[in-house]
Amino acid sequence: MATIVDVADRAGVSISTVSHVVNGTRRVAEKTRQRVLRAIEETGYRQDTLARSLRRSRTDSVGLVVSDSGQPAFAEMVRGVEREAARAGCILLLANSGESAVQETRVLRALTARRVDGLIVAPVAGSTGEEIDAIRRDGTPVVLLDRIGSGAGGDQVGVENAALMRELVSHLIGHGHRRVALAAGDARVSTIAERREGYEQALCAHGIEPDPDLVLTGPGLAEDTRRATLGLLAGPGRPPAVVCASTETATGVLEAARELGLSIPGDLKVAVFDEFPHADLFEPRLTAVRQPAVDLGAAAMRLLWRRIEGEAPDPPGGEEIRLTPTIVYRTSCGCEP
Image 1 (cartoon, helix red, strand yellow):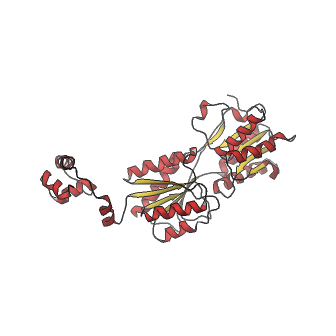
Image 2 (spheres, rainbow, N blue to C red):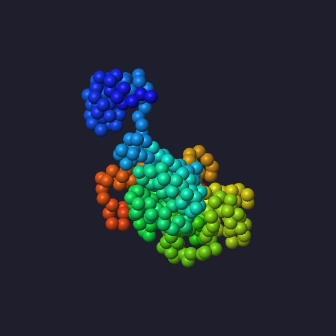
């Protein structure tokens, strides 16, 4: 196996020059750099990244834990994290928690055992945060992504949830609908709790007493939401409008409406916080809050990298970054095309 000495001999340079070219630690004249690169190719030299990481006490890797990377919003966040990680010269290790606290603990411990330089985590519903706190105390930087809140502490990156949900519900009320249902999902997830808060704020602002019978809670999965929505929409007091707190609950609502033969927006007005991919290509065309999901992931990775590099000391209680989504009004809420 070729060594760095073989490369230096072949290129006619010092070992330190080869090291600077390989690691990017110092500028090397372009002609010399090209000579070293040719020598690397000709000798078949492969850098021993494990030995290098041990010398530097770094692995140039970061871990990302989300509940389900197949969900549209999380998939986009992963893209943002990966893009910024690549720019920083890091490898991204991705794990799914499956919305299980046990699985979350398992993958967090597995990633820290692999000595990742930092972690980005979207905590599971009902997470105590104990494992994350322990990781922070051991010196590994952690940034919470998407599922954040005032009580979580530490570095966090998410979106404005309550304000945008308040605006979305107010829009439906503005169409003349005083009874607006909410397909909420699991309120233990901080984003869902904040969106429910925005829903209730909108009702109160318009002098409407919140009705708990119009709020669908539970795991937040499509099938659970479908069953709950069937019960809500099949009765004589069917609400004229439903706002969904996620694409998953929106799927359940749309399935139930189709099963009952209800047209959207003719029989039922629907809006959703978050957006399906290529939403403009499908019917009904859903009014939706469009999250800057790629930017969320990128912002989380940039913040984590600052902590890894020690460029900025942690402020007391950590730093909280909130990005602002936009609302795309389409026909499902009763707007004209």
